[in-house]
Length: 377
Image 1 (cartoon, helix red, strand yellow):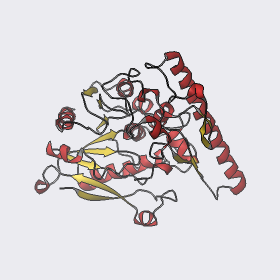
Image 2 (cartoon, rainbow, N blue to C red):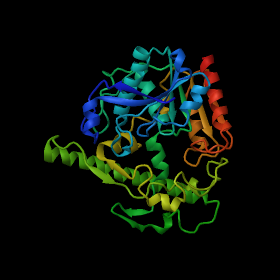
Image 3 (cartoon, rainbow, N blue to C red):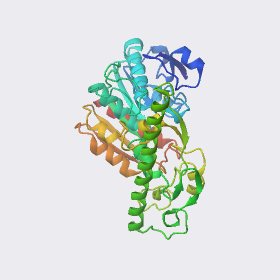
Image 4 (tube, rainbow, N blue to C red):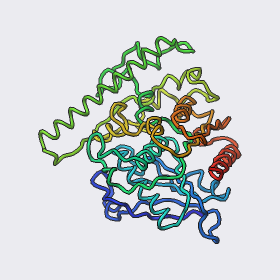
């Protein structure tokens, strides 16, 4: 049976959390499934995390518990509000949860499972838990992680994860947009959704990637300028501003599956790529200045998974679904290659999608492999 687990925060939520009730409570709410509630807790707990998704009802909690291991789904202070995520504060929230699980609940072994966008976050967490060096977020407003309580975990699992939110958006950003205020002014030479023959011309894809990087750099330069203007005008009294980003779901891999080949069908996690590209349901469509530098800017983020994994000493298990339309095999390989513990493992889950769509045994079989590995390390 799912139970709510309240966890006291080690710091104040701050003004970037909309709900006054949440700020006043000082609590993070997690969901827990126990393998045997009548027998107390298990020796080990798997902790599923993401920067902003609500994992209280995560699909893997009950199946994990059915394998004899307690499972916890974390909700950071940014639950349901990806617009204002500052990854450094998410790391502090994970520290609060892990400290609580160890010291209050009594778990001996804690394994952090970074699912999807949680991959880069979990790697960032462990790198700072082992050797804290980050004193603030790139644009300010972040926790000083050298002073935070960050108990190291015993192992990391990357589950259908990508390299990090900035890396992901770098591959998804639409370079055909000519005016950040007008999504309909488009460069036809860079329009992924014009009628193009498949497979896409590789030279064109290379030019497309260069243009994506240039657009991200332009947005980042603008963000830095806005932050400087805020400081000049208000001297810190107004620390942040919101803004929108058009065209955030235009990766050529969505239409050409021979790029980063896998078992996936063309399309995105939100359906048709052209529709998903302009709808406000995809990642990065809304942001704040500080959040952009922390989670979306390749040049600034501290949450690049492979870089962080190179700094950690614990075992790492990377599991990826071969039918995933959002996280591709090269992303899993980059995470695996960055890990250096001899017990590292790479698992391809054949025929499964990002949310383990398909026969239920695909999830059960993957979790059985993960739990078996956890018991051996």
